[in-house]
View 1 (cartoon, rainbow, N blue to C red):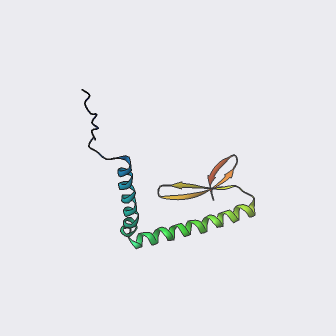
View 2: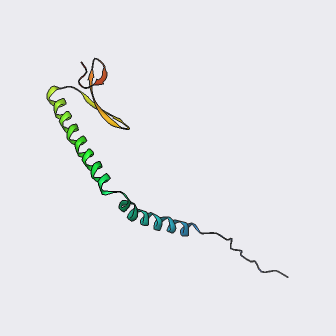
View 3: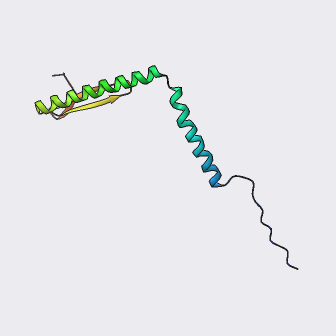
Length: 95
């Protein structure tokens, strides 16, 4: 006598269920996180970004007028403009 084949479902989640949960979590986080950032911090970041953009444009114009190569070095706590002289990058203003 042939016994019927039984399919056992293993406990757990399918890939589709996991992906759906991750998608919903991502959507919820994308709406909640912007409300957690204080407006004052956001305003400071925008102001600093605008200052950096203005200074970079000014340096670009100066480089074009003088024909000198200039660069920007970024640090964790700031930035520095450089000028290519005598075969190496040197801080702008150091002669």
